[in-house]
Image 1: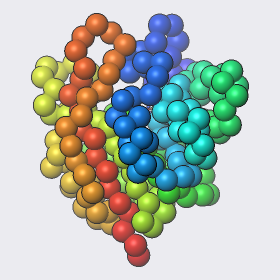
Image 2: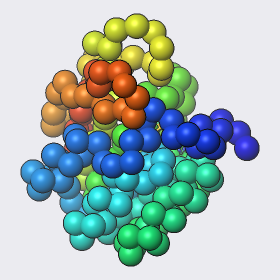
Image 3: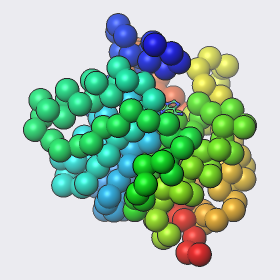
Length: 195
Ligand SMILES: C[S@@+](CC[C@H](N)C(=O)[O-])C[C@H]1O[C@@H](n2cnc3c(N)ncnc32)[C@H](O)[C@@H]1O
């Protein structure tokens, strides 16, 4: 067991709130999600499961086998058809298919600079031309230094400068399963440019 998989053994980690993040509930309600959808770094799958419940073709991918096992169990229990894959978001091209929408709830901010560059190449291979990625990530407006790296709006714009159009970057919040206040976040949407 390596990396994040440890986080899924025992009590749920702070981000694993047992329901979709409100930001993604809102995006779905606004009708801006288009299928097929990939939830990159899906954890135990609540966002992908919610979209599947709305009728979207949804796939969840995470490097943590324990998280994917939990996601598959939820899908079976809820009677939802979601494909949950143990895989590497840094190598999405290996899936051999593309998606109209990728959602990223708490994945972008886990990567260091080198992996961030690899992730950008990976996304380019996985998102259809004209497709979108919606990212919910830790924001530099979050005080303190605990938790993942803080991301600035400028970093988001720089990461997606090549081959993507900025559609929206807005202040948002992560809910957590602890007693603290919600975490300051960015909700960012980028459109993959047509070739
Ligand atoms: C902060 S958690 C968020 C999980 C889930 N999206 C949620 O909101 O509950 C980040 C997730 O990214 C996954 N992850 C980290 N690096 C990854 C990689 N290279 N490929 C796939 N998943 C990865 C971790 O296993 C973890 O489940």
